[in-house]
Length: 283
Ligand SMILES: [Zn+2]
Image (cartoon, rainbow, N blue to C red):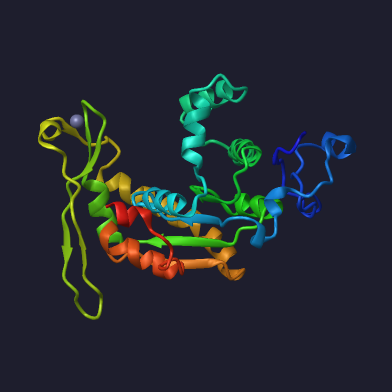
């Protein structure tokens, strides 16, 4: 069954074919047999499925951490498009060769490729009985948001935000153990509240003693590069945020600190504070 969500130029006609794939080429238009009119199970009634959420947030904000914790809590897959790209690169799948070329040339992976990978992932999950998902790193552009809107319903978009000065400090504090690959953060953030701005405190994530002599930082975690990354992110994400804001789906969440401060507040904001929180109980 061809249910890939491939796209070429976004025509409104194609997008109006809701509940089904956005078409890949004119040939698809001429080949109705490749279309199934069966409604996409991803468009199930919200009462019959789990949450279908999106997590937005700039690099370094901890989006993956919170999305991962929530997916555990709610029993839905945490689908990070970065992981999908990495998995495909390591596979012998049909896209792997193409992807290697793109990545080797330092180019950005196209919307089409990302959507292809995401669509494959959603279909595979669906056949395993998964309902719902939390997307992380997607949609990245307004075009991707429109395509996603054409094929499934997004219930909520959580926009995680952190003060830029704190974010910068956090990014500059990132360290990797050159031996075991462990990720740490040496930034200890303790900003007092001032002029009505709340203070913020974030504990460092220090390495165990056997790693501490082997810490390295990523060559692209310099102030200049991090600032540029943030600038590009803000420029790209603004229209995506507006897209969901105008549909009443955007939840802005200002991270009040590290995980211990933020996690309970996030659950509250999502009306999940009554939820049986195994993670906190286990912690
Ligand atoms: Zn180590």
